[in-house]
Length: 139
Image (tube, rainbow, N blue to C red; front, side, top):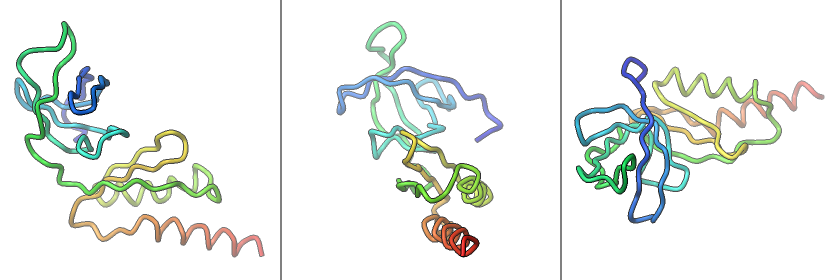
């Protein structure tokens, strides 16, 4: 998704009675592709194409209409292990990117992982391998 211009839009989601700012790529006049995850929604995830209503809630706020196209990525939330530092976790982050996926850390300890649906990468297993290797070095 890096080739296309990423913009911010303000959007009201009626089902959640909340307004947030979303990083998106404009697909057409009323459709946008999400470029990150909404931590409070299982629907608004990386790669999902959404529709907004033509009428805005106010001058600069779109209203979420629904999902136009579901994401081609899985979505998993992982509690990040305190046994690993940021540099060590970036090793697994690079594995996710190499698989064509996306990851982000939210609230300091939650890892949001989006992998292509065909990916076989087991992120938890890879994190556990790093923890085991780190513990073996301490012995």
